Length: 318
Image (cartoon, rainbow, N blue to C red):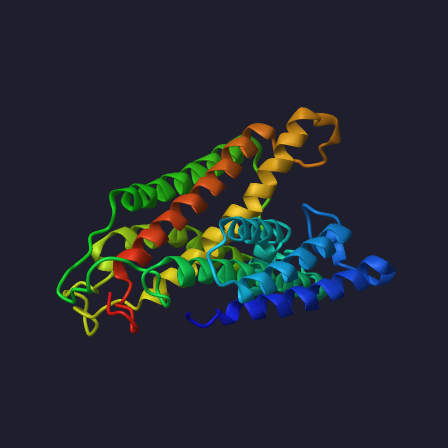
């Protein structure tokens, strides 16, 4: 029997620690969370405590399991997804922290709480995947099946991953075109001041690169090997994590933030009297699904890239 994954014990510890913090806050000791007014969304405070308790039980169960349990695996994935959906403001925290000139409201207590929630979710998801891989695949380390790895083979990008990459680019440009339509119709104000102008320029540059160069690099050969015509670096392998880490982070942030946002948008559309925003619903119904589809396409392209470029397993050689 292969050893149990350490991620399960880490998920257990994280769930107990974060659950204890949320319990303390639920008892009336929560700090101020600045202009946003809260640290988490989707579930109430005591709901988060309950989720952490379930996550701790699942982490312990995944650590002790000696056979693959599909129900336990599904429950762990569901709890991890709910915890992750509870911290959509983490995307704003990262953008606001990197580009302070954008003046995005930032609360240290809220940021640390969201990091703790996301970390608990990530560890529980890793424990669930480790459980499935350890007890279901041929190799307890990688879970792969089939013959040995052929170092001379060049795995092609799957067709679905290529379509996803181009879909992410299309969604990004749909969002940009929607913004141009809004500005031509309403003339929305921009960020002022030198710091604000610089931050806005950096944001827009990163925005376009994350919506065009990044997804395309995941589905084309030049995302694996630097073209030979590039000085100094031509012909070298592109480090996998150089593309996978930002792609996974951006994809997760877009899916969580705008997934929750679309849910709120549905409520505002059904109950327009409750709206307090200034942007028209027509723009939001184009922009927010475009963001979400961008995240979905980028994530799928990253998955295809990860599978196509993964190195052989050190345990089984596959």
